[in-house]
Structures are given as structure tokens and as C-alpha cells.
Image 1 (cartoon, rainbow, N blue to C red):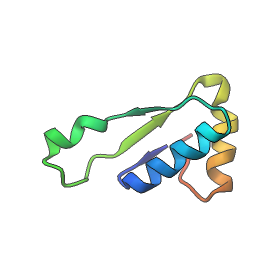
Image 2 (cartoon, rainbow, N blue to C red):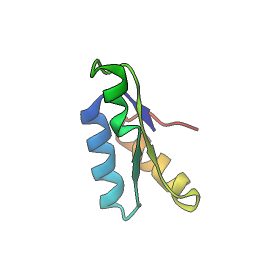
Image 3 (tube, rainbow, N blue to C red):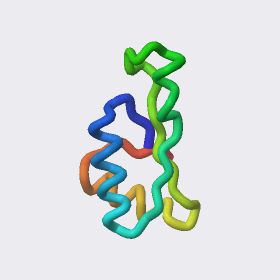
Image 4 (cartoon, rainbow, N blue to C red):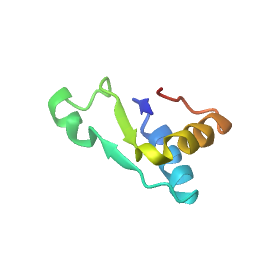
Length: 67
């Protein structure tokens, strides 16, 4: 998943963690480089084995899914 909306990232992280899927958030500190204007997206990564289940959880909750 990729998003510039921090609330969307937090919601998706909580949903995935609640399903027992480990989540790693990338690009958290990029705001220092961009000046905190929110144009650089953050990414959520999951293990390859959990990817299909994670996509299903995100889709079921109307969140964007990266293929």
C-alpha cells in the first residue's frame, strides 16, 4: 500500500496487525527531506507470504492496494 494520508496508513496498519499480519512502514522520515508538505507517499510492506491476505483486508475496507 502507498498513501500520502497518514490516517489511512495508521488505519491500514491497525487492520493488518489485527489480522496477525506483520507490517513495516517505509518512508516515515522522508518528511524531513520534503519539508513536511506531504507529497511523498509512505508505504506499508508485508511479508510475501501474507501479501494476498493483506490485499484482501485492504480491499474489504476500501483502502488502496498496490499490486
